Image 1 (cartoon, rainbow, N blue to C red):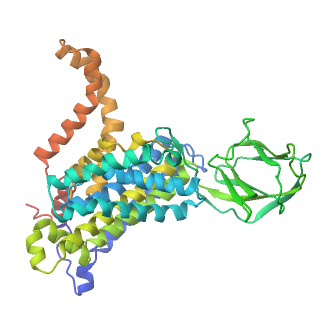
Image 2: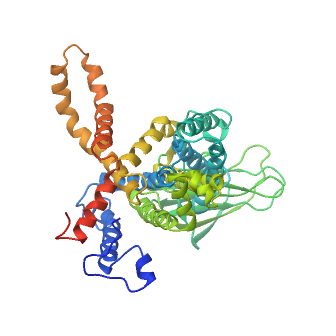
Image 3: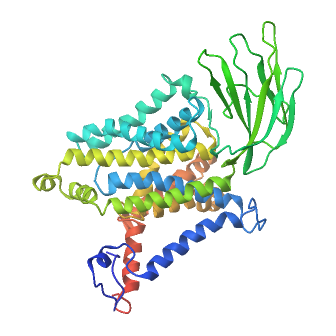
Length: 473
C-alpha cells in the first residue's frame, strides 16, 4: 500500500514500478538510518573514540533487538505471510544456539562455519515439525508445533546433557577472525616456560603449542591465566588437535583476558622429555559488545532485506496465496504442502541464525532462555508489530523491548505505591510480582482492540498520507 510514488512522480518502465525504493529520497532515508545504526556504538562509553555520549546499555539493547528481529522476521514468514501458526519458535532458536555452541566447542568449528551449519540444521528440524501441516491447520497446527517446545528442550536437557550441559549453563567462545601470521615463535621446554602479556580488547593473542611427533606419553601443556588459575583442556578457548595415533599434536589457546600468562610443560613419571614450539599470533576478536554489534546489526539488516525480497518472488506469492485461501491456491496449481514446508524451513533457518547470534553474543547458554514464554512473547511481538508487513518484526520487537526495559521499570515504582492502596485486600508481594505481566498483557490487549493489524499497518497509512498530501483524507 505504501509502495506508492509521491504525487506528481510517475514510473516510465517496469523496473521502476517493481523496485522497493520508489524514489531516490526513499533510498537516501534508508541509507541514512543504516549509517546512524553503524555510528551508534562509536558514541558509547566503550568506544575507541572515547566520546562516551551514550551508555553501553543502549548498544547492547539495540544488538538484542536486532537478534530478535531476525527470529520474529522468520516467524513473520510463517505466520504473517503463510498463515501457519507456530508456538515452537523459541525451541527452534534453541536448536540454532546449542547447535552452533556444540560445533564451536566440541568440533572446533569457527563461528563463520557454525552459523550457516546450525541454521541449516535448525531448518531441517523445522521441516520435521512442519509435517503435521499436511493434515491440520489453525489451532490444531499450533498444538502440533507446541510439541516442539517440549520435545526439543527435553532432548537438550537429558539425552544430550553431555554436550549441552543439561540444566547447567554452557559457555560459548567468542567469534574470532584469524589468527593472522605469527608475530613470535619460541622454544618451550619442561624447565623453560614462556611468559607474556596479552589482553587487547579487539586483537587477541592466540597461543599455539606444537609438540614433536611422539609415540609415548607427552608432558602436559599447562597454561596459567592472569588470575593464577590453570586453564583446563575443556575451556572454551582451548582447541586440541590430535595426530594419527590419538596423541596430542598441538594446543591452541585464545588469550582474551588482560594480564600476564604463563605457558609451560609439566612432566610426570613416564613422560617423554621433549621440546615444544610456541607460536603467538593475533586474531580479530568479537568478544566485546561493540564488536558483536557490528556483526549482529548488519546481518539483521541483510536478513530483513532478504525476507522482503522473498515475498516478491514466486515462492513468496505462493505463501500469500496459501494464507488467503489454500483451496484456491491448490486449484491454481500451487503445491500447498510443499509451500508450507518451505515456509517452515525458512522460518526455522531465521530462528537458527538468531539462536546462534544469541549464543555468541551472551557467551553463555541456558535452557531457560528458550522456554514457552519466549515463543509466546515472539508471537506477541509479531502481532503488535504487524503480521504480514515487512517492518512488522522490527516495530514489534522494538516496542516490546522498550516496554520491558524502559517503560515498565519507570512505571513499576509508581504502581507499587498506588496499587496496594487500591487493592488493600491483596498481599503486597503478589501485587508487585504481577505488575510486569499485567502491563505486558494490557499492552497486548490494547493493540488487539485498537490496532489489530499492528504498528506497521499504521506506519503504512502514515506514509501514504504523507506522499499524497495535501489530499491525505
